[in-house]
Amino acid sequence: MNVVEINHLTKYYGKKRGIIDVNFNVEEKEIFGFIGPNGAGKSTTLRTILGLIYPTGGSAKIFGKDSIQYGPEIKKQIGYLPSEVFYYDKMRVKDLLKYAASFYQKDCRKRIRELAEIMDLDLDKRIDDLSFGNKKKVGIVQGLLHEPKLIILDEPTGGLDPLMQQKFFELLQEENKRGATILLSSHILGEVQRLCDRVAIIKEGKIVELQRISSLQERAYKKIKIQVPEDLDSNYFQIDGVSNVEVKQNIISFMYKGNVNAIMKKISEIKIVNIWIEEPDLEEIFLHYYERGA
Amino acid sequence: MNIFWREIKAGRKSLLIWSVGIILFMMSGMVKYESYTASPQSINEMIAKMPTVLKTILGLGTFDLTMVTGYYGMLFFYLVLMAAIYAVMLGANIISKEEQDKTAEFLFLKPISRNQVITYKLSACLVNIAIFTLVTFLSSILMVEHYSKGEDIFSPIIKLISGMFIIQLIFLSIGSAMAAVGRHPQKASSLGTGILLLTFFLSIIIDLNSRIENLKYLTPFKYFEAKDVLYGPGFQPVFLILSFGIIVLLLGTTYVFYQKRDLYL
Image 1 (cartoon, rainbow over the protein chains, first blue to last red):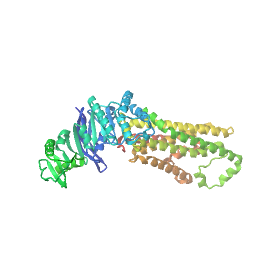
Image 2: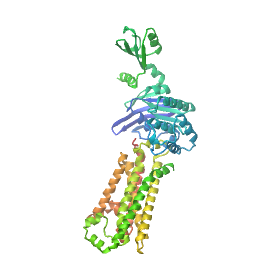
Image 3: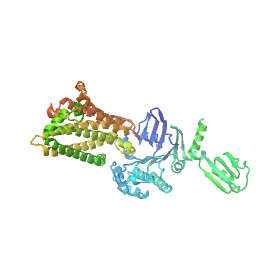
């Protein structure tokens, strides 16, 4: 069953492009990633399916119901974390969460306490005294306190330190096990890779790829840089999948695409001083789509 | 109901400040009346010598300032102005602040429709305006009573204050419509206040120039003027109907446009 169904969704802001003909489905109990650089249309897509803004064309269904017509009803089961968290500044965290909970016909007190403990959030502080990261934590608790069936996150990890990110991902995975479907937008490939089953890649308002994360990874390039003790024949790494070889004194760098074991074996056969293996950033992945699209 | 109580709480401080302002205004205003009555002849003479333009701008009009109701009629000119400013800002801000403070993403992700949000918010406004009106009424009665020498003050004041309440409702709906229609919510308050000043000055210009008297339908400040209510025909049905029509139209506009437009995020 599809929890989210997006059909030909298009949004123009006047003449400015928002998103164009976006189509994808999020299946029940899946963690779906939605990636693209800033300004590609991720937030526009999420805000359109949530009825904050209205589509120019197309439509979206959530839980099988039109997302605008049945907005208030389906929102009972949606938890949302916006990319930038803003709240009523003069409130205390406790009061804000109480206010948020008051919109749902259920007792959320226990869950609020649990979540605050996991996220290490001080409930008695005033919102305007909180740092950006702590405001984000309020957002997380606020988005999850009613145990929603669909969790939508827009760039969720900005401002969280690595430890909190870790806790937060664990929390999401728990929610997912409990049966929640998760739709996560991000411009950081790493976090999407860690969590998601499938991804949609959006570029300049259009979906350019819809893939299982596993197959995307197979196709993805790695940036490898190796420092060797003595000069090395630059042809040593001329195997399948290696490209853009550059040699600067005793540092060799190249891009690699393919089975990781093959390249590791090759590296292990020589003496090395240091090694850097980097995931390509999104720009580089997109480069790949530029090339293919051309 | 949670939004209603939230708004009541959020509006408490501003309501308190305005109320204190009104009470102080009434107190200082009526204390001056005491000095007017000390030498009634000279005050009336002085005012009679003033050019009409100045009299009109000061809101003195044709009031007999030595009579407490006449004097109150002059004060009322300013009370209405303050009440209208309060109402128009209240209406504009209560709608636009969610977008301005970027809390719209919080609020409209809750299981609640935009129409419900508007209804709760406008209800909170109504309560605030009712309290404002009550404060104005009570401080008027108490202060004016103190200086009245057996004059009947209760019924003129209740008439005037009722008129003020209706004017507030009109400006509340102007403010909310501005915030609902406009593409820039942060400008709603200044737009509303702009309309208020425009209509206010129009009402003064009409007083100065009787040839454009028919423009009086365009400015709510002309609908329940003290000189009409106290010395003239009282409440005129045409203005009551007009007020009702404007309020309904603008509230309708608020609902329809706010429902249809993109939230400004």
